[in-house]
Image 1 (tube, rainbow, N blue to C red):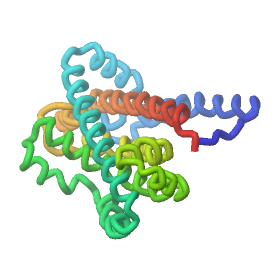
Image 2 (cartoon, rainbow, N blue to C red):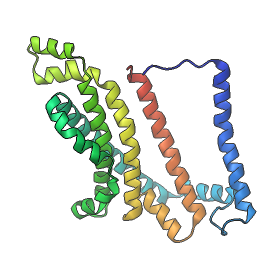
Image 3 (cartoon, rainbow, N blue to C red):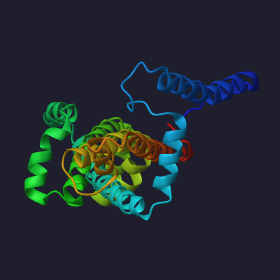
Image 4 (cartoon, helix red, strand yellow):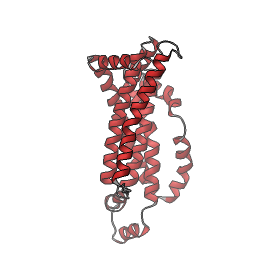
Length: 256
């Protein structure tokens, strides 16, 4: 992916704003918490949230729920990536099939995946398996659509050269299609990862017996609001780290 060069002065300005933004938000949070404008406990003070956060990260119970959420996330994301790439290449390499499938994939991609939760729970129960299935379902569509669009955009001359050389289907895939699909696949994975996280957390919140989403809604139901916010911070930090990793992968391999 082409990168826009930023001069040092603008870089410093960007960094300054990135540092100041959370500082300003914390100050505003503290002012609201101490203003008495909202119902007591809805916006706990920063100190209360920090104490709750420290209590969570030093509690062994947190890592049980954290591990389950990560397992659901990576399990669902891996399944979504494999199936999305396979389906995307299969459809994109056949223009007629892609035209037939595109309206259905596009429609299902915009459908809130939480509506499928009762179905996956009937099939897999309320344990981690249903959240993996829901996450895989959510992540599949962005990856499949991006891969299909990328496959349709592969230069025809390359495909024709492969045919002239009588390459097998496997050789066409590995020598012609996949080298041209690194960018579309990575971009689809970034989009797919985001919706996979959302689907899994919603599944845990709606009906689950473990995971960070389950823990957050349990604290909400018992009105331990500072603890709830601490779980949300942990989720946010995890998403930040995963997004940074995906950004690195994109910059490293996406040359389109």
